[in-house]
Image (cartoon, rainbow, N blue to C red):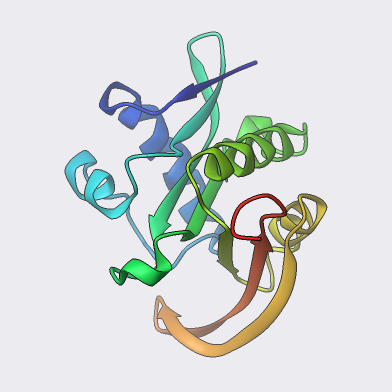
Length: 162
């Protein structure tokens, strides 16, 4: 397994993994992947990582800004998706640990994630990588006409912003 920075050339595989996450009904409020340009604008230029087995992408993770205000420049929301064939094999932990390390190198002091409470595997993954539950958003949005909740987790760096 090799971890690389995501480029536009990787987007077809990234979108397929995202599509697999969408299909679970417990990964995102999105119902279809966007195009590369929209995805690119919605994510920070740094901390875009993918795990590859040879040429095949096994998973990806990226950061999005939480605010345009400069005081929140060191805070980002993360997305992480693992291909169906690679789930339960430690790829998520490998990728999330690498993302945390890269985020600290880039000056981030807080990473946060909003996860559907039914997605217990993702919640456990985040907790195993130093995230803690800080809140719960009830009926924060609708997915296919059904109100959904989010568990909010965050990880505070022990080296940046202390």
